[in-house]
Length: 571
Image 1 (cartoon, rainbow, N blue to C red):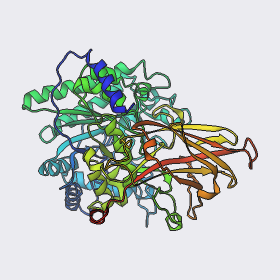
Image 2 (cartoon, helix red, strand yellow):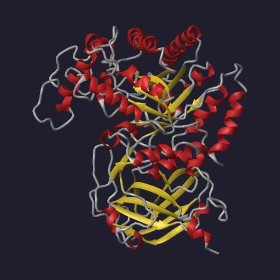
Image 3 (cartoon, helix red, strand yellow):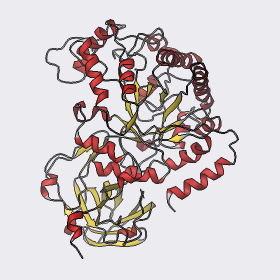
Image 4 (cartoon, rainbow, N blue to C red):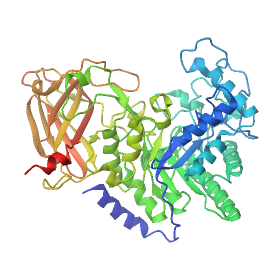
């Protein structure tokens, strides 16, 4: 059964408990979240204004209709009476370094530009908002609810706010809910009324300050998703619901005064289970109609299998929309191509997503009932070059609508794990990397968002391939692969191996595949719209039984070769 049918049934059930009519939402188009890092990049304050206007102006003529713009967290990009201003205290990183070579050595230049710009009366949130409005876009300030960039060295980080310094002994989480990293215990603990009031104070200050140019507000609970001590999220979720309720009330009251609508967007973890773990009761938010747009999101990387249909089933009866977040990065992966050559594998495996990889994810989420997408961290891509690169502009176009994906190559992936999502806390546990013992099998699932069941249809692929990336795979091994119960390969691996000459990086966050196995899928109709099951086994005939083999990458590519002028003369 496709995700679309599952979502429809769930929505019907959820709708029976909805009694209040919801308002109609506008077409937000493609959303882009900008974290505000480029607020002050110019050599002078006036040049920073011009550069920021050009930065936002690069979206002109695209399908990006909504800009959410970050204002900071504890240290903010506007004159504040509640948060902290830049350089509110001296920090070791804010020291001039001749010929800086990394981000830490560049803090002094960055902070100096910010301080000079604010002293000159420049408000980058307003500059960005006014430019966005001049382009006919929706504009919403964005606030990160508990950003973690400072936690690894809070007493020296320029991002640490005065509130944290004054209250860290009594109002931080301490008992990190992330088992493998105690640093998350340095985050503020929303169990404390003072912490919640501090966050609300900054949010209300921003809403009041930008009410004339904003169309709503974005709460970013995804940076980061840690709000409470270990195991306390579900029982303390009502505290977060109350915060969201107060913000909704503030926006409604202001909207009535100003005679306009203000919308509330919320970035949340990628599944309902992860949301509740963190202390976010999405069902309660929807039941009370507190939020207009839910944005389920990974922390850092693109996912193909976020259970968006779960959110849609709750959101649709409440009149809300679901906009999955699309990221520009994945693990260091090797390209999946219809006709690969050795030259394609001579460089280093890349983290940048390809258009085909994004299209596969988009097809899945349209099928699950998504209303659109939000781009996150795309403003940083390709060194932040403006205008954006052709690759990024193509991704913008591909995400415009389901029709934009027709006859376009797609890559469907088993989402690989990255960083700490193996713990199944703030993100659901990923299926790969996974180890398979020689002589046994492993089962993986992946969604496919389009229907390839009819070989006579115009959308039937011209070529479909499967690629599995291995580590420690003996080249004499025999492999057996089944797709949805049908055997698609049973034979030696050596005939279909690609041994990359390039570098396969190994980092603390993820490990790349060192050996690739690629075969055609002769019958694309074996793929089903919805969840697909892939079973892989390694034979013992020529390999010592029990040896462990790792699967680090697993993708299916759907490719088209439609040259209409050539087709015109074919019989």
